[in-house]
Image (cartoon, rainbow, N blue to C red; front, side, top):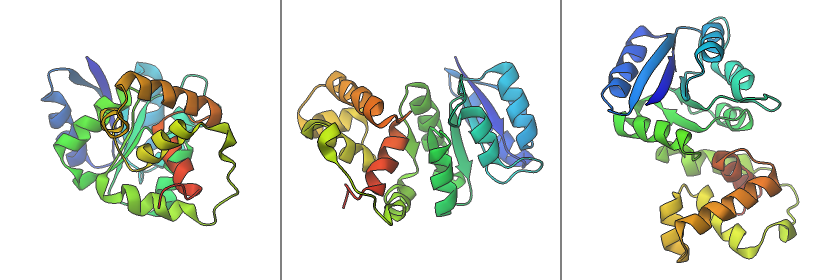
Length: 212
């Protein structure tokens, strides 16, 4: 079972997400938190597989809670999917920098929410399609100098497709390679870029304007 913790200051949202998660045969809700402090404490205590985390919450906002649970320097990070009403650029950038395994808008729908949870567990990441390109494009100014010598041409191909939101299977089909080969390339890219997940890889690519 995929164990999910829901953190949102609105009881109706927690109930709605709980119903969606509870309807899946392979998922269960292991806790609910109404503010950031409670979210961090509960996540550290019950160690869920995935935390669904709102941004604007009392006592401690979701981005700071995310940093404490999955940010740089955290020895045993928790997988966190940010689910919010607000798609502000600064929120996306901070969430990616602090280790988010996904960024969804609350109106994305049940199917995408479930998909984001499963993606986080499998080591992938999902960003709401409606904001993927628009928001990541805005991370590209100004663009730092880019030396592509560290990545092979095939790795660069994979990175560009990741930045466009393609799944491993879609990348494999596009490049006529096996899914296992895509995963191997991504593992190499993560090591070279010191990126912890494909969301950070995508952000890295957009910041350097590798995707037009």
